[in-house]
Length: 49
Image 1 (tube, one colour):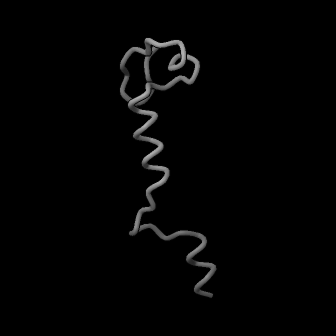
Image 2 (image 1 turned 90 degrees about the vertical axis):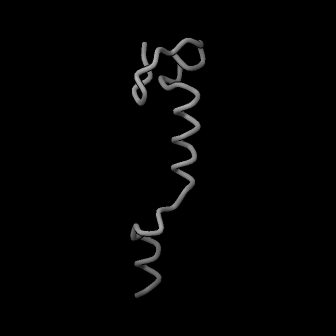
């Protein structure tokens, strides 16, 4: 089984259960926490009305 993000083989039991490698999982978690300053958010649009 390979990681769907980087296509590297998943070796540990934990990675296989999650379906994603540890490095890619960390990168995705950082992206989720980071808000894109150029992206319009639903909350900002509601507060401006």
